[in-house]
Amino acid sequence: MLAYDPIAVARRQWEEHGWDAAAPAMTLMTSVVRVQQIFVNRIEQELRPIGLSLARFEVLMMLVFSRTGELPLGKLGSRLQVQPGAITNAIDRCEADGMVVRLPHPTDGRTTLARITRKGRAKALKAVEVLNERVYEALDVPADKIEDLVDLLRTVRCQAGDFPE
Image (cartoon, rainbow, N blue to C red; front, top):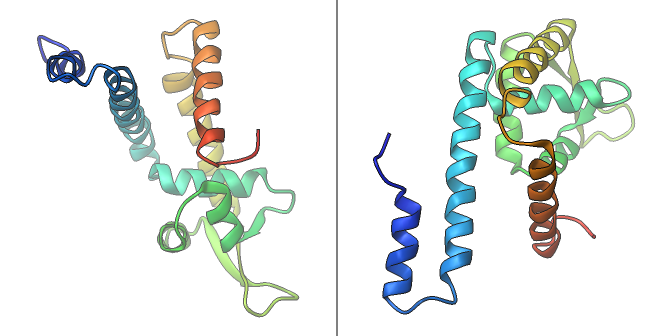
């Protein structure tokens, strides 16, 4: 732990160099990136004993949430907003651990489906239980502040073209 806030120091440096107009957004973006690192590390710490990474957990949850327990790999990548290689890697690992099976699409020979197995569903639901209790519900931030931040970040995501507003 540092004895000072390095992002506040960076902001001060930005302002001292005459970049005052950019300093607030630089501070915001740097803070968001750092918080993302903190959140991912915390989530990964809880998932590791269950035998999951964040990427594999996200894939399993997409399959849990699907109507049939299966999705095309391309759709998984699109919904998770990751490159095809990342999905392939996560599916490879899940398949090797018996949590997912690959199947040919019944009507499109170019498409491969990923289907969650009983083992995968059980691991995903155990992970949700752990994350809800130890990470999400343990976040010591008032609910109204969380909602304000979610709304702000949604605006930024819409402006970046993630989805229509």
